[in-house]
Image 1 (spheres, rainbow, N blue to C red):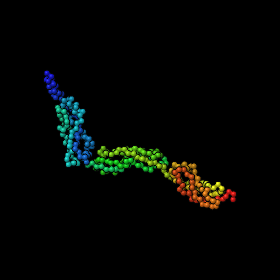
Image 2 (tube, rainbow, N blue to C red):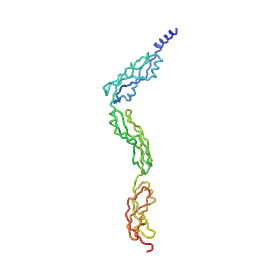
Image 3 (cartoon, one colour):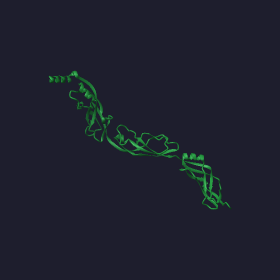
Image 4 (cartoon, rainbow, N blue to C red):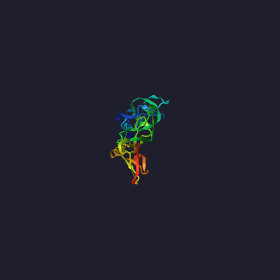
Length: 297
């Protein structure tokens, strides 16, 4: 009796009354692609080309097919052709017994392939914004400074460099290391690194300032008196622009240092006591005449 019941259930399971028709998703799987070749059309074909199959069979089995990773294999032809037509053969599907394929779409696919190329390219930093007032970018050092690109030969040959995504340097006043992502050059080009470090070197903007009528201070030995033949001169200084702006407000004092000299008349070169980073470029005149005499003479 149990055997008969099992037989009846099997007959019903596979009978037309229990049969359903459904369209399910599948992928056309291009196999045996040579390592030095890649499929460029259709885009993404190496991961599988979407297809739709219509199947008929017992409901539970059709449901299995719905959830299964249905892949229809197509072999890459020998001889490494650049173009070929892939014929989709649904009989290559691994389906449960009792499920039949009614149709497949597409029935064939035009495939175009290219040789794989590799090229080492320099990394170029793309930046946006400007450093803080009075500062500039002196250097941008990238680590690593090159990247290995892989992809279709026609696309790789066009690449001259790889750029970073825009890196904002707005209002920077100090050197810093920044992380930067590399730009994407399409789904078929891969890069062996996608992130780099960029050392941004920020330095003050150098400027020059010329001031006229600068007071001259004469430094004398304690036992001597003396004076310069002129009381004022012009001075040109060089240094960070922000420091020079402040210096222009506070003023410059030129120095004629005669502390190591004796009585008499001497030519003394003018110097200046300046903030760090600022140097005296020139004075006019370059020297002054200092007349020195004894306090008791």
